[in-house]
Amino acid sequence: MELVFKILLIIHITAGSIGLFTGTMNIIRKKGDQLHKKVGVFFFYGMLINGFSGLLMSLIHNNQFLLIIAVFSIYMASTGQRYLSLKQLNKGQKPQTIDWILSSAMLIFGVGFLLFGGYLVFHKNYFGTVLLVFGMISVLMVLQDFKNYQGKNPIKNFWLLVHIQRMIGGYIAATTAFLVVNNTILPSVVAWLLPTVILTPLILKWSRKYKIV
Image (cartoon, rainbow, N blue to C red; front, side, top):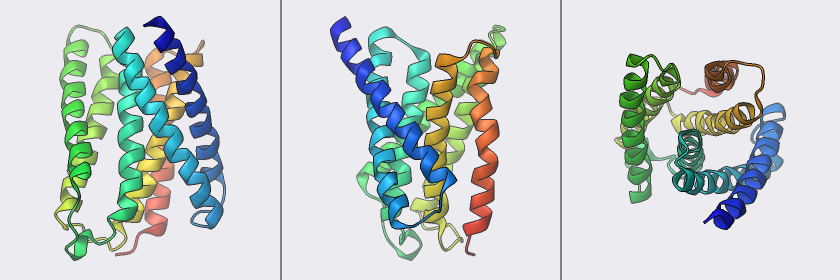
């Protein structure tokens, strides 16, 4: 089993590095051109492979850190990519089974994060704060999904905004993992939440910039 873990670790690190590199490229350069789309494909598969390898590793070693990052990586990358194929939800298009599976699974994990986070905080383990933050974000995103799946989003290009939000969210997951693993200075809770605090304003900025009502 340890050999399997080591192989998964190599895959995980390689895919995560690809995700970090390509994600940084697409954040700092022009949006929407052909290079952006090509780089985005590498980011998507990098994050997806990183997520699934991390999920398997978390099960082998019962690692909560890997589990949280893996779940977010898979959900963010998958739904971010899926919304590019869901542009007509406001015009009668129906989400596919995979869309419901992704959102429902994230809802289950999100509620689990909230419950376990509350339990930890109650017992004065303040890592529970991290779980509460990630759990709240999870539930809010899933509620957004369910609203979009019913064609109730009044924003014309909602799919683009969600794509941007989820892909940056995937990048936040990647940078969080990198920071937490390599952190030797910051308090653990700060290391976990710092990428979210720093990068969330970019989500708000670009959502306002590209929003079409």
